[in-house]
Image (cartoon, rainbow, N blue to C red):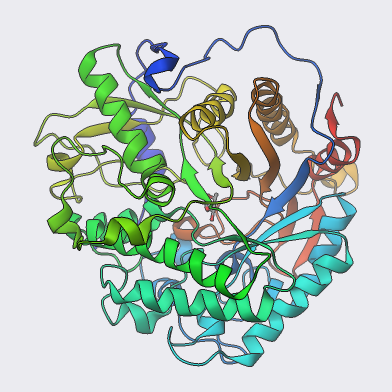
Length: 512
Ligand code: FCB
């Protein structure tokens, strides 16, 4: 199995220039493109209590992979398998955040940020995914949360950012429906022990991504490529999402539960009926599949034909179980997609993951039979060092689309950021003058301010990410951090973009 992800090669070979963008009728609930952003905004203010924040994920920053009783996760197993990660890297140590979290939270505080989104590693809490809680694991997160609260920072907890206990994968992983119940037990443990101090919870980070890349395309652990397994995994995850919400609320009256979905605004490649319908399927499948399940108790129309309930393992009554309206809607924004209709049998390259990039691919046997769309990432705009197009209007369009479709919910931007490889510059005293990252954040935040002015209720923005870290299959070859990490000695240096972002947070406005 070749699980390496060659994003550059992919970009060279498969990205065609995007066709004309269609501006669709807002009443049809399709995305309205604002590719022409209008006059350049020079400054922007944010609501008084807007939360400026940053995000991390346990596996990417913690290290300490077998300390204090932690069990093995599927990502431990995957990274310890030769040939899966660029440079043969592992996350056994990564940023050593497990031991250095106080220093790191000090950086968050220094940047005037008021929200820190982190994830809890399930195998630290239940080493094999079921059974009693590991006290040392709970103590760790309890200290982390206390440190945040003492610094005046809101702890935003993602309960699952992809590191499933390996023992549960050995029982079949997410395609096994029993995992929904195990996950609810885990949620209850978290709520019981930490729910007095954590009030903001997101059950899953990017559920579509880990379900599809793990079971449908084989690019993530456990490396399976079978569309039916993906469908079964997706259904278990949506049951787990709602059961976790109820489990948390049963033990913690203050629990406020939302999400951290990966989303990309999708624009039709041409104005043809077929491409517009394919774009709607993309949105339904990749953006709002789990959101709709929670909010409305039904899956959106992501498939060409009927919803494949049988393949999903859907049982009578599941629509009631999976309905659990979220208190707020959280999603990430990195870049956009251009979508076209795919005829059966046509296949693109392999499935990709470049931050949240994922494309339909030949390994995803049978995918076209169900969703039949083809998604491309355009390269019209400047590209980050990870090869993603910088597309500022996308955040405006996406926020407005979700606002319209879900009746103007409270929104949290759970991640947004860019990889640039700027390193300390000796001639300037070791500063990191990452000007492209400043431009990136400035342009994205201007567009977010536009959405706020348009009536969207966005209450936070989390820059991905606090520290340069282990970037999944890319290993350490990408640097998304506001802080430069020297992995030889773990020294942290705030990049110029961090200092800039900290000033924006303090001023609560963008005119710097
Ligand atoms: C997001 C993931 C996060 C990180 C960034 C770059 O999709 O949630 O863990 O990989 O992309």
